Amino acid sequence: MMFDAIKKWFANRHKLPEAKMAEFRSEGRLAVGEYVKAKLTYLNYKAPGKRFGYKKVWFRSHVALTKARFFATVYGRLSIDVLLADERAKKMKFAVENEFLLVTIDAGLFHPEWSGTLEYRFAVPEPQQFVDGFQQEIGRQ
Image (cartoon, rainbow, N blue to C red; front, top):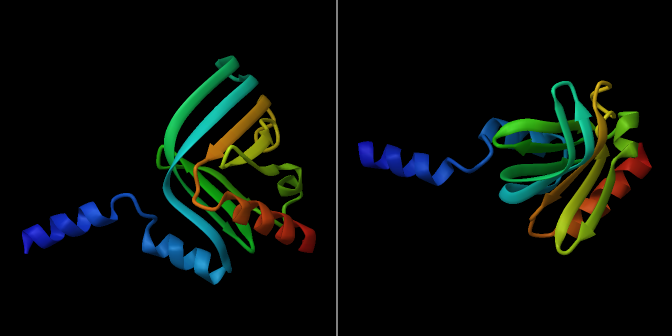
């Protein structure tokens, strides 16, 4: 009994919670990457108490694109959760760079006291699927 519980915990520890996956399915899931390698690059970044001319941070992330939103985590915590109907989503840039999904965001887009550029690179299995899905859904909004 206890061994089964431990085995189940190890099997699911790097997966999105089932409740979150059900939410994505109900929104029309287009693409998901669970526990993928990712990198955040800060360019000319300024925020209260922080300043980086150039800084890179590697981490593991969960990434999802639905017909309604784009979602990503950094170190297991929510980093991006934007509805595609939001005008700010149209200002985000999605591209494929060296087989990574590249998401570029003006740091002040969601936090007015921040400035600079944030470049997220996600090692998702099919990055073009995210780019195509994002562009198609943004075009419908």
